[in-house]
Structure formats: structure tokens, C-alpha cells
Length: 113
Length: 115
Image 1 (cartoon, rainbow over the protein chains, first blue to last red):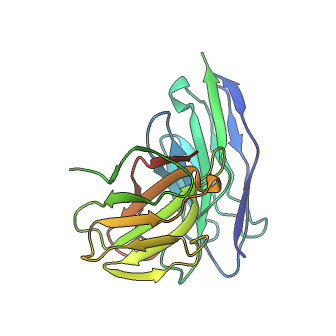
Image 2: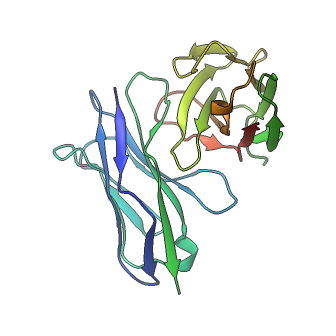
């Protein structure tokens, strides 16, 4: 079945460091790919998405490119802030599945001043 | 406007008890999803409604789990004869339409602890 694998956390960075969180997927067909974020004490929020190969999703300085050849959707940010500390989830949604999401296990990011 | 709300936020049950978890989606949202999130894991799909129709219940782990959305708005997830392995956060999400094009908005979750 479809699945998502993320790099394990926690990831600890200093403010203004470069961030990469790796995400790879297994799916039949052409899924849509998502990054969700969960800030401390809050619910899951959509961060960005890409719906076809080579699309780049971006939001709040974060970017991810849908790479079909490597089945990857790595999350990047050039300069992280303390306020980016959160748990990040990579997810996919397959075609004709009503929109249900399949999530990775999450990666906790802690940014120190 | 109001987001997705869930109640109760926390529930402690003794093993064998029945529980009911409520989800109030964003008004007008057609699709409603339930997910189960174990500690330190990502959410796992349980079931999906389009209006009042339950179109996919493939993720329900056993016949002890039952979900309904009788009027196409509020939904209830019921767990009968709770077991310790049912301890998790139960998330509800709603979206305006159906399919991958529609953003899912998540509620804060109900944390269920089964003793």
C-alpha cells in the first residue's frame, strides 16, 4: 500500500541555519504531496502542497519540490527561526481516494536562539 | 469564523467502557475525516464521510469502532469496549469539497487514555 517515510527527529538547529527534512513516498499512480505542521499546543495545519511532478510548493519561506524520479518531497528552509519549532508531517493523497491523507511519522524541529 | 471543534478534549476511560467522541466541522464543509494518532506517530486514517454518506471505513481497526454523521454535519466516533491499545489522539478534519484539491482543516483532537 501507499506509504510515507520521513527522517527521524528530533532535529535541533540554531537560528538562521538551513533546514532540510527528508521525505520519500511509495504510491501507485500520481499522488498529491503535502507538508503539515503542528505547533506546540495547536492542531495540524497545511504548510504547503504539490499536486504533480516537478511542482514546487512554498509558504512562509518553506519549499518542497515534487520529485517523481526519486519519489521524494523534501522540505527546505534557508534560514529557520525559533518560531519554526514544531513537528512537521509529510503526507500523500492518492488519486480517487476521496482525499484521505497518509502521513509519515513526523519530524520534530527545535530551533535554538 | 470557527474552525473544527472536537469534544471532549480529554477522555479517560476504564478498559471495557464505551466512549463517544464528537466532531463539529466547519459549517458547509462536505467532507469529514477521522484519524487516529498514537504517541510519537503520524495520524492514521480511520474513516471518511461525504455529507452523511460514509464512503470509506477501511481504516477502522476493528468492529468496536463505529462512526456516524447522520445529518451531514456533526460526526461521532464511538468506540465500544475500549482497550488499552485504543489510547491515542483522535483527530477530525473537514474540507469544503472532496478529493485532493480541497485543504483539510484539522480540529485540536481528543486525547483518549484507556486505563
